[in-house]
Picture 1 (cartoon, rainbow, N blue to C red):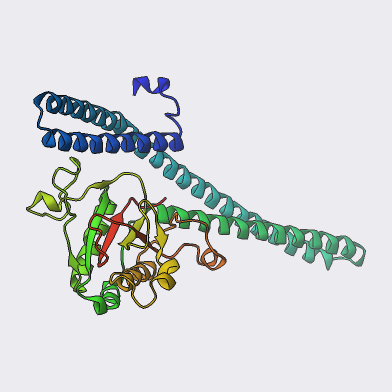
Picture 2 (cartoon, rainbow, N blue to C red; picture 1 turned 60 degrees about the vertical axis):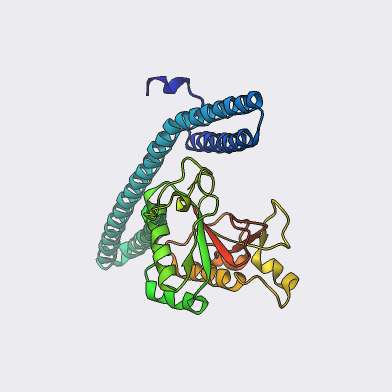
Length: 348
């Protein structure tokens, strides 16, 4: 766009992503403030204060909309720069393939030279010593070229694997096995907390919802959804706006949450760290959530490189981190028997 040269960091993918995320966060905050001031205006009896609160709420709404409008070109720019990176990986892989082909050709040439040197060595005893030396040098060249070809092939394989993981949509190749592992927990209640606004996130969320229902789990609407988020969308064809799901704007990957009163407000703890605290009386959602996390770890492809923290030695050997269940004070219901699922965009 013409004014791109005046926008700092416009050509940097990291900068564009950071600005886009910041603008989305600002929009979310001001939408929340809008809801707060609308509630205060509703509760206020005095007409003057009521009008003032409504005006302030309108200003918050204007700022939130402005943040979304400014963030839109950054979102488009993020897609453009991501496509360029993928294109550069394609070019790099092709160049590496060309280099490998040339290396194989060079090795064939060097091998032919070695055979010629060995043939000439038998022509005369006087020239045999020199011919053997030449053959030895040629064999050394063959070994070096072959090693170089092997190294280039390994580089090509690694780059193609990385490229395929970037392009691949998330999927569960064995739905029957996935359902079978969760059916012992039939009746478990769950809800979708947030879903990212991209086709891959919507596709895997709908597919996961279908599998959970076939396993006998019960989907709940997100409570108090009416008026909570103006950008909430009707992901599952619900007739009641109370079942609309807010968009995930900040995080990536699929996250699993349960609630427990032992966790303080604003705090998150891993499920594994609380088994001893609960003793013989864990929340009823704990074991089903643990089974869901294990099922996603084994059954979701490509494996997600989640950002819960540093990998252990075992996880480094796997190349990815297993899904974890996080325990919070509340996740939309506060009920300890409900599992909340957040579907973010596919991690790159």
